[in-house]
Amino acid sequence: MANDQPLPHQQATGGRRRALRLDWVQPIGLLGLSIANYLLRLVTLGTYHFWGKTEVRRRLWSAVRLDDEPLEYTGTGRELFVGFLIVFALVLLPILLGGVAVAILFGPQSPALAIYQLLLYVLIALLIGIGTSRAQRYRLSRTRWRGIRMGLVGSSWRYGWTYFWTLLVLPFTLGWATPWRATRLQRMLTDDMRFGDRPFRFTGSSGPLYGPFAILWLGALVILVVTGLVIQLGLTNLGIAAIAAKRGQLDSATIAKLIVIVYGVLAVALLAYSVLSAFYRAAQFNHFAAHTFFEGATFRASTTGGGLVWIAIGNFLIWLAGIVAALLAVFAVAVGLGLALGTSPEQTPVLTQAFSLLGIAVIITAAGLLSPIIQARTTRYLVERMEIVGEVPLAEIAQGQDQGIRRGEGLAEAFDIDAF
Image (cartoon, rainbow, N blue to C red):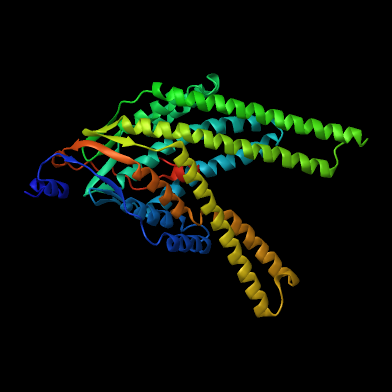
């Protein structure tokens, strides 16, 4: 009978338990793909975004190899597009119309609008959790290795509710519930993951994370205090200078200095916190990997805070290069068109306005120009620092049940969240 035929991975292993090797094979053509995706998004007013994302995923998935066999991504741009349209119609549009209706009926300064916004924040927090679970469910359902699909069982609403109420705990514990919350959510997702008909297991506890988190928490407290003191000192000095000059009030030059001080100090504080948090995130990633099991195998990760900082710095420079390149391209087109017309865009109001609008559009959209390269760089770092320890009985794994998912991660697209 056809159902008795061995699956591809069973033919390859001959019924033996196998230790799996995890590798990364750098995908080619990411720069060309980045440019093509960006131009097509501009031409289609953003609609091509879903198809471009799908092609990027196919290349990144195939770059991850288990025993020299690539992962396969089978999702489609149409599924992502339809998922977003449904969420837009059922969630985003009603939220927008509801806000407009409350403002019109009760006035923009009415307490009713503040209550509506508060309820909206609660709803969004709940939907972010649900969207995280649904996005991972979709991506896993579209992930295969040697013909066997992955999956995520369990309730997205249950995960969303846990995400929401544990979020409310954070301010009451001054953030100290963070490791406990992250571990609880990780357990829910991992225990619901499947490869074929076999489950993953997560056995980690939050205890080992509190040492690294204590360093992060104390460091963040120092950063917060120093930031506040520096800003207060700057405000005081500027106020004293204004009084000494007998102005009695801050002039435009003093206000400009104030803005530079505040935003400059905040930028430095954010950078310091990002560097500090990288070490906690590395510890968390390694801890979660070491306590994730599949059959007889577990994972070992060796990410470091310094490595994550280096990745972040490189990704920022690549992101900045994409914006600069796009702006230079617009400038070159403007100059070329001006030369062709025998004038410059500055001398032609219509051209000036058109290229100004185009420049704004470029700045807004160019942030994602080189995102495929950034995603590949980040994924490569994580994969190359991950290994699978132990053996897996591949021949015993049967095909998982098709969950009937026909559209993808609309909530994740709507709220700009990621499943992983």
